[in-house]
Amino acid sequence: MEDKGLKRNIKLFEAILFVVGFVIGSGIFLKPAVVLKNTGSTGEALAIWIIGGIITICSALTISEIAAYIPKLGGLYTYLSELYGEVFGFLYGWVEAIIASPGGSAAMAIAFATFATFFVPLTPSQQRALAIIMIILIVTAQIISTKFGIWLQSISTIGKLVPIAAIIIFGLINGTAHDISFASIGVTKGSGIGVALLGVLWSYDGWINTCTLGAEVEKPEKNLPIAIVSGVLFVMVVYALFNIAIFNVLPAAKVMSADKIGVDVSVKLFGSGATAFITAGMMISIFGALNAQMTCGTRVALAMGQKKELPAGKVLGAINPKLRTPMNALIFQGVLAILFILSGTFNSLTDLTIFVIWIFFTLGVFGIFILRKRYPRKPGLYKVPLYPIVPAIGIIGGLYLMYSTIKDSFGGAMLGLGLTAIGLPVYYYCKKKKRLNVND
Image (tube, rainbow, N blue to C red; front, top):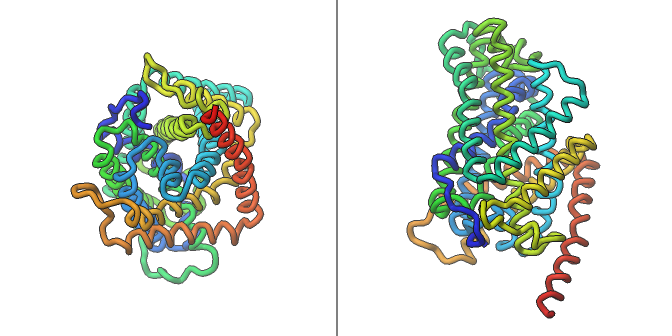
């Protein structure tokens, strides 16, 4: 599949920046207050950020071995298809390409436009128009050149790290609150820890989408694992230092009540003019995540199109012969994202699919056991360390998130499964159509 025309020109450093740029979105600026509020102490909040990072890195270490042995277009969609069967891969691809990815892109485009109102007054209609323009710009850039899209991702990643680095450095040096206490660790009971961990895992989400670039990364069997693990480790360190800096600048009570913790800390460190600084940083951060989301959703749609698992699969799976970019799949993702923006349903639908995405994600991590039985070992290829302990930690994290979702939102979880099941008639229709075409 990877030999159908996509350029294999994404270098290792660019892939690492892609991971970092996708994972670090708005969560780092919004979730610290939520996590602290649900844990009750700065020490316990830091512990939750580290635990969430450990769960994430264990999952990343595991999926990286699968990526090394199946370095193909589509990422998790392809892994599930090859390890569990086509129907599992299709259902994940259906949710990701039709709802989660374009819906997530719509949500990020709206968030970008909302933050833009800090600089320019915009009515709700004008915000939607700006969000649509952002989608069109990113689609156009990625149609012109995949390398151009990756270049935008690299620049935005470096740009978003500037305000984060400033808060970390000056917060650690000049902070006066020094409100970090481990005295009450283990005191929090009830659903507080669960809610806090969900928020942390949400902030770490997105790294697995780098696997969708398997057909475009140079030496993917070696570089994909390195990019994923290095990127997640870097994010883990950044999140821990960012939280330490916050607690060093503001007392816990103020952190808990903060709606925009990044702005509050920046104002404390740099004065009132810092609001524009941090808001611009958040816009750059969201732009990078939006660009990455469009890239990955397109690759899933492209892979499904090439396997004729969606209507008009031949069109969706085509690579532009001159530009060697997935033009049709990009336009498809862009149109869906714009429809989500216009309908305003992106938050409700993407919230419903989070539970389902985590089912497939956990199946992906568990797939390492199937991979090792089915695929012969290849000397020199990456393998997950401390097997099977590391995969087990990733699986336990995924199961815990699913359990928490069912406990807190059973109806939403079931609706998410229903939205997924809607794809089954499409799968069997396309499969039947493909079989008839082969017979003809």
